Length: 408
Image 1 (cartoon, helix red, strand yellow):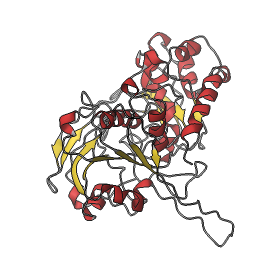
Image 2 (spheres, helix red, strand yellow):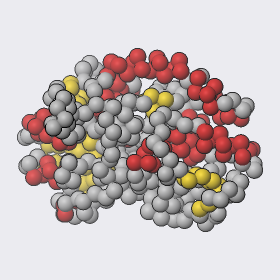
Image 3 (tube, helix red, strand yellow):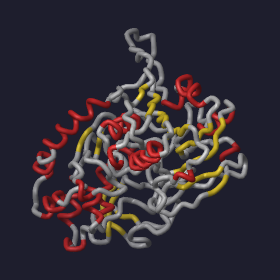
Image 4 (cartoon, helix red, strand yellow):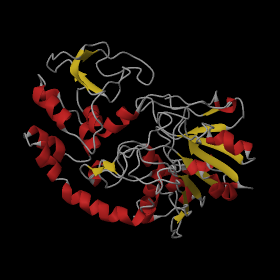
């Protein structure tokens, strides 16, 4: 998947996001009503195509007219014709002041966790503020002169995908500086799937900030409403939030992303397997960084030689991949059928067959899982079915809370 950016964005530097919102006021998230979903009651009448919040521009352009606007976005912030949101708004004479970019940067080219520096677009002169690293939450001086902030990022529905953490900080900064926030909603490619253990407070980090399962089954707009409604921002403050919904969309609909959301999620298969294979980031097993099959294969030098192997090498999005230059043995999942929910079978298989169990897990695994219990269960030989059964109570409680914020 590739994105065609207009000339005004070709030279934009990569950066990172994470703002937030707060004041003593209590805000209800305003949700711009969506048009009725067109039902295919007649075989000759095709269902109307899904429109993202960015394409629902009649609802948000009036909010931006005459305002000094800041935008939190990256390469995923495009309309259906592949025009980037920033180019579109400039064409509409919207007064954009600054761009704020998340992990992987404005153009989405940086490695996971890589330091991103502030920059400037040489074509438009717009400054780009990095919201990653030590500056996950924009400072008051970085928001100076902004009347309203727009947030447009494509999430993938997993707790440890950091765009929802960036949303938290964006909301908090907006709330603290009395700046309204408009979230342009986008479909969740993993639909309504809810699965995985609930994050425990003591394991809070940028890859998991809230007590939710690994797969949360919400769009990023719904998630913003939940952050506000559950008062998860610092000191319980709330953001003046408006969500611009998708049109002609339900979570049962398949959705293929028009552009990869980050360097190591290159296609639909990787996005589908992301939540399941990301647990390998907390082990000595490679999940394909340094290959062209990221999050579609796994392996290590410590797993049995079984016919499939690969050698990670520095590439786009992975300058120093795990097991760089070493032959790894494992499994190729590029052609398997789409999975529904969180799958532990590959993690369990790798753990049970590794030649050195004592070095399999690293501390980062607990941050990913959100709980120490999962590692303990795996080491104790608990089956996948039994482990997943232990999640049920927490997931059911979460689903009851989620109902309050659903749009679709």
